[in-house]
Length: 176
Image 1 (cartoon, helix red, strand yellow):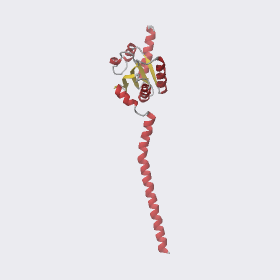
Image 2: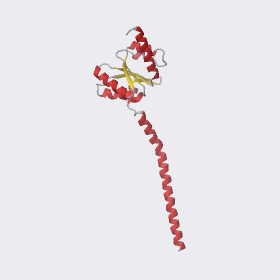
Image 3: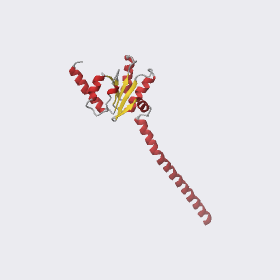
C-alpha cells in the first residue's frame, strides 16, 4: 500500500470509527482464514464489521478523534470491531463465536460512548439481551401495573353490579 492509499484508508477508517457507537479491539491470533471469514459474516449479520488493521494505522486514525487513548492495547495482532448498530449485538456475536473457536478472538478493550471498557465489562455487555428484547421487557414492566389496575376496577364494577342486582331483587321481594 503506497502513501496516498494509506492516507485515504486512514481517513475512511477514521470516519467509520467516528460514526460508530461502539469499538472493540481484539486479539485474533490462533484463528485461520476460514474462521475469520465466518466471524466477519456473523458480525455483519449483527450490524458490525471486523477489520484487521496495522496498529500504526489505527493510531493514526485515532489521533484526531475525541476518543480515549487506546495505544497501550495496540500491540500484537489486532482486529477492530466497529459496531454500527450498537454494542450488545457485536459483543454477543464475538462471544458466541469464541465459544466454538477455542475462546478466540479475545477482547482487548472496547470504547462505548467515550468510556473505556475492559474485557470483563465487554463480556458482561455480551450477556445482555439485545435492544428489541430490552424494549419488550420495559413495555411489559410498564404494562403490568396498568393491567392490574384495570383488573381491580373491573372486579369492583362486577361487585357493584352484583350488589345492585341483589338490591333490585330485595326491592321486588318487598314490593310483592
